[in-house]
Length: 130
Picture 1 (cartoon, helix red, strand yellow):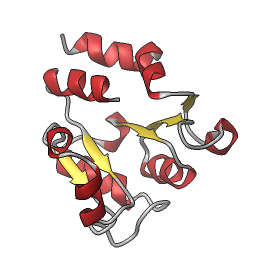
Picture 2 (picture 1 turned 90 degrees about the vertical axis):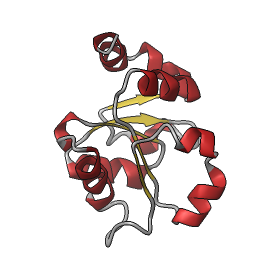
Picture 3 (picture 1 turned 135 degrees about the vertical axis):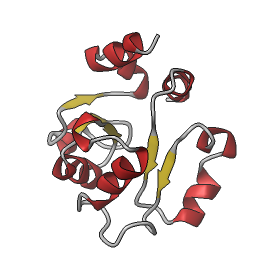
Picture 4 (picture 1 turned 180 degrees about the vertical axis):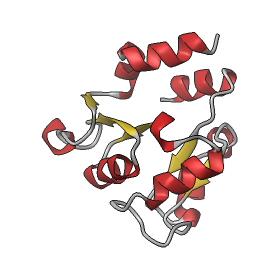
């Protein structure tokens, strides 16, 4: 995942963390080095309604200045996938913590983070920014 974050950051593609965790836990879990590469961080404390409501992803897209329909969400949990889809984003599910059968609401489901580089959509995004 760090490789993808680095490539997106170096390509000036706007990226966000959207987490159900409270801000304090999120700050203690994600290093400053990684957090500094994100244009926006939305925690569970930042919206009235959390996942599975669309508010977290809609808030992130507004802060990024990007139409939600042009956003790609990478999620590993069913509530996050529901939130992303309700918001109107394209969602890629990663079965890093759950079986793929629980992530079927996503537009695509892959097995691990390194599989992201094999997806046509991610290849397209990275190629267009070079």
